[in-house]
Image (cartoon, helix red, strand yellow):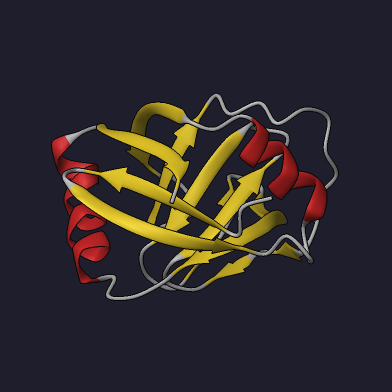
Length: 134
């Protein structure tokens, strides 16, 4: 399985290292379905988080569980079938409160463009997101 994937959002390319040893089922399912493409939207309850909805990786448990996210964290919510990318520190939440998600990996390098895109996303609307092999 590839250790790195690329995310292309609003004209920027980011490379993420997958945590295949900590979330093997989710990482394997994600890589098997690449490339993915769809509209990235801003999270409603979780703060600084970009989401790609409609990503069905199958009936998976939460692995490498977390609710607190750091900048560049790449997560999967099995029940909602969505991938999220945090652009600032945050906590994954629903209206009922915090929920656990699978921590899939982390984007590497300078994330200033991700912060810029993320902050604009809630005002400008959905942007095309492509997830592919690095």
